[in-house]
Length: 322
Image (cartoon, rainbow, N blue to C red):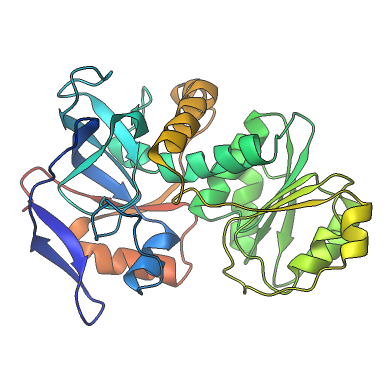
């Protein structure tokens, strides 16, 4: 089979590699679509290696067809599925623990299904498990027009919350309002802290962090939970601990990729239970910015690098490729 590797010059190359050799608890998926994440750019740059045991090539979520599965699992050859990976999605086939595989929701395409596992599992982990979100909570979602942001906005609304979100342009602001965001903050024109003064939030899911985190966290509602999942805006901030402990705030660091397969399986099981009917009914829909054949992976990476996308970018594979 073939996979998309990174060469010594950091270019992408479609190279022949060995077929996956599944362990006893793993299913093999013939990949039809692989969604991109910003973690792919970090891995390509050498800053975010895959966890032990996963392929060296990128790809955290795929959709495709079961090509082989453990006899005791729920899967049979030919089942249409999507899966969360520790890596290895940019390839014709991938082996993955069977508990990290989910059925394609009824009515969704492979492209749409590939955009579910990483983004929506991250949202479920951080909003439902880490933050314990309840109906009526106000939730701040940083980078609301990203693939993760568009997933989070829809999840919060489906669970009965109010959404505050940040974007970088008026075009993106209009899009997230149509998606259901209640309060939209343009990072280039508005002061997030001032908006939070008027609308204190109970939960924040933050991929930006940076210097403003310390000032903004002080504006949260009493007992607020600020969850940091990345630091795209910088790793350092200054925090007034007096305000922090007097208001009973919690600052939580969280990543999905480093969790064990067992933990990921539990997260995905909860996600399927809570949201699969929402997907099938059309009340929640993965937002796809663009799909490109895997031969154009360089172009797909450029879209993410330049922050052009509203929603997910997905690579597609045909059975004849390779």
